[in-house]
Image (cartoon, rainbow, N blue to C red; front, top):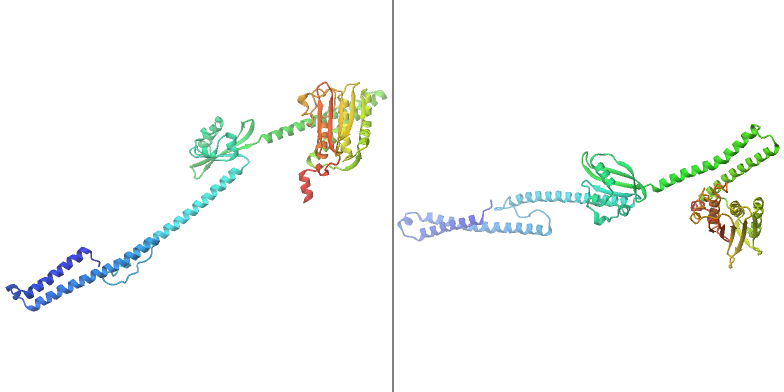
Length: 489
């Protein structure tokens, strides 16, 4: 049992009074003192003295034990750890250390539990932080515009594409109401609808800044009925729509170009089969028309195949050493009859100097023939077509030009004439072509031979096409990057 300081003082005073009474009894000669035996006073004095000494000893030992406990507890406080109090288990502090250690053990257990819970919470925070960074990285790297809105309608996350599309900065706009950031009323209405009326993603098309987007708004629920966030993804489908339109246009163009000669061939064959043409000369004329339409169909298909081969990098190209003067002379000879039929003067002003070039003979000839044929087609009878060529001073490049006095090309159509199926408005009535010739010329000159093509023309004042080519082009220029990688592998 542990006594308080007040109790110790009271006991010391009591024992002191007993000792003082014993001394008084031994020294007094009064009737009261003398009436009691001497032994009584001696025992009383002994009891008082012994009690006082025992109380002093008890107080000293108690204070020593408590000081030891105090020092150990202070040390625990300094190192922020809870241990056990180590004191000698003896009277008067017997059992005190044990009870204190039981309490300290309970505290240590609680602290260990709290420490473990803190570590678990730290781990969960780290995992959540890692998942947050991972989510932010995924959103940032998305090729679509992505916006995340919390359940209160405030902006939480947005990637760079979304910020550029709607004109805001995430650090300045985070936690702001979304209606203050996105001014598009229909998008705001769809966000409200998705937030309060739907549990499934809402998808719709939306036109924004002259582009077409497929917008998907998805509500995110963390529990069965608790909305956590809304994600809005804007996928740009403008190019896909344009490609689909180009595909439709291509199919329409091809169908038209195939149907026209086939219909003509079919009509003339039906007339021949029915025997409507009685004379041999009439039948011969029909045969020539059929042959002409068949040739036109063959040229169309061949041009389509060549364009496809060039664009896919699968064109078979054979570069060889050629005499430019001879090649141009042969090309001019092949179209000379066309010029005579229209009384057009065909001038071949190839330079007198011989020059060797490296090119694909068939493709180069097809380019020159296309340009000469077009010049003759679009030149009125009695006009003039001129074929010319020259070489640079360093003899590393050369040029070929085809000039006519025909109807010319309007300024706003010069960049369009190299598109597939395009024919200038002024020449549609004069030519039965397919609109693929110049597209093929451009591909052969630029992609196969690494050159350039220049057009000089004005409406009603003739045209001049100039090809600029290297004497020794890189043969690999005819191959696409995909084909080169395949060869390397």
